[in-house]
Image 1 (tube, rainbow, N blue to C red):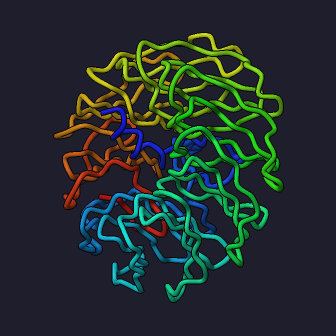
Image 2 (cartoon, helix red, strand yellow):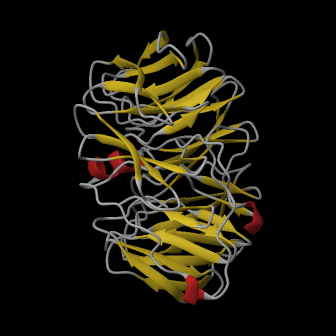
Length: 402
């Protein structure tokens, strides 16, 4: 179970951090989102406005065989990976397929988009760079195993982890390997880049900080179990969970332990940081709020099952899902339950908030739109499969993975 969730969780990271790559935000709601570390995009982020809900109709749907990779959105195009081996580009307004590129195996990696190129990994062992407009291959690089990690792009370099135990850096234009760094086990964690340092976890129990230009080790910190979650970086601190039940705060420059907090089970949820508080879930059924500076417990809220979902914060409320099938809204200061909404299955998805609406997926195959203050259901839309990654609202279109 933990292995399965870690595979899904690699593309989810609590990047409520505005100094790092790939943060999706809905600024009109003062939203700090436990979001994707792998969806580097520069497209319009105008959120969907609340209003006459009779106008909310299915805009389009696109049939694919078990889409598992999150989508990146860029210039009105949605990019997705799928179990059917394809990377596809869809028109965000109509859902019409613009192009598709078939790899040699399933695509679990989430696409990253930068400078007109789509970067993505495949279980055929390759990292691909595809023209964002036409879908033709610009370059590919064959690694030694599956590529389930999702790329991050910065300073002209593509960073990604591999199932062959390596962290890779490629020239974003040519695909030439700039450097690689060998870890002791598979790297399903997705890199975060801040201040020219690459941070990433490995199943060898370590968190690594590497020079973004040279790949030289800056520091590593050894935890007591696998590190499948992806790091978040805020105010010079790296926050990350581990299978050893701990949440760690590490100095971003030195790797020295600032603090750790021990929960009662695996920490597969990725930490989110807002207003000096770290919010994170644990397999021990709890949502925790910790002082970001000291690690002291501010509050915890006990749900009915595992909390794999990564929390998001907007307007003083923490939104998070649980395996008990519920979406919870908790007061960010006190942890008091504001409301909960019961779906038909586990909620692994992170929530997205825009203009007073919470968008969240459930493993019951549905995407829900809930009124942010009350939890009242505005609408739901049935997809063809589990929705375990958080929706993104852009240009008035709700983009989902299923």
